[in-house]
Length: 252
Length: 356
Image (cartoon, rainbow over all chains, first blue to last red):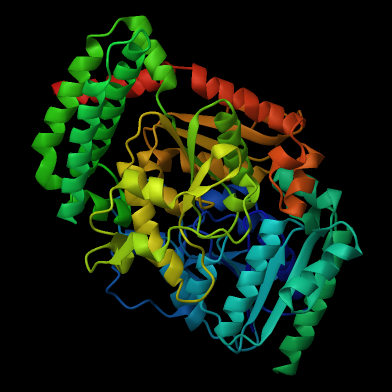
């Protein structure tokens, strides 16, 4: 199964994506983590080193360096994974789609967007779990173009802007034919945050409580699941992983 | 698009006529000097476009229209610079301090760009300045922080037209000058701020956004009024900076939160921003050490009242006007409107380009 994780910048997409991927891998699932942000940093939430964030080569950058042009067909996704994937904790393989580094004449005209679309659409999910952490905002959701077989997680923190962007993400995902859309009420301070998010989104909502351990991990640039495995937010994302696992198992 | 460029050159001539028309009054000297400074900036901006010095698909698209007019632009720039040089240094200083700001806010999502941009815009307006708040984010946000209705819309359909050669296929309507577009289409926001922006993504074809992005950038590149501040709030992350959405600005505010990833993003943005003078704004600051390589010009303290304003979708200036975060943004406003150093640096660069 493929999961696209979307939401406002700073709402907690990467924390949810990284922690969910780790929990799913520990449940025995083969997990491919896709960092679709042209400002890639998912490696941190997955528990990889801070250095790896800068040293890993995203697909688009690596292909362009080796003479690939936009007219060439995109190589097979599993071939790309073998060439550019980076092994992480619990057997997860991480791949980034593209990174904007500096002004350049190289054709990065779509940043990571087009590579995200081509890679996410082409990777066969089979019995793997593909977790894509999208760029902040709605644009990358449109680019990733999830479909009826995919799941979309719309992550929101308790701010009016974040909730409105998640609401739009749900409507956009619906109109793309996505059947499984879940809201994630991140940094929820009380039961009311998740409830009111559910009312606005009109989809089922998973609550991830506000958690000082996550805030501290964010400040230091570490993975919450390693920094404090028993913290309430990490535990809540474990429940999310159970739901995802139940859905994925149904598919065989 | 050449007709659009011709109308901007006409705009420069109007600007020049406007400066010349300022009559002799004790107050006029700095106003006249500011008018010439504005003309220097505007001609320099258009000349940069003509020379293709901006990167990104969108900027290249804008520069195509300007290439046929380099000579006129150089001559306008040179005339205006000669005029500026005729004023005393203290008149020039006063004029520079009162020359409208051209600011763009960039940073990671959630760093606090939008709340800072909106609060700054309203504080400047309360000080009697004319302020245009420009929303370059295809996701909703700036209207919330300004205290506008949440469904406030961006540039209307009548301000844009379909054009085959334009990126995304749309541009500013022919015959509509950037200055007129602001007068006609910028919404009234609290404290007299005017709001103008791209329309928001709400469906998979993102038609509303596609139709308005180029037109809003054309307005920012062409808006010439030297008495107006322009504060633009960019979409999160590096993509729009890579596309040079910030290229109209002569100062950048790089907003960084306390998170390691927010600092990573800021450090990655610096080389993409390019040569434009950049101030680091440390937001939600909690007394911790500053991020390596990012010395803040201003520290906006962590402030639970601002978090609550965000929860409610209210402007910080309405919800918590006396809060420490708002006080820090008042300091930022003070810094931006009294420090002439950065403007001087920019004008010196322009001088060198002209003489070479």
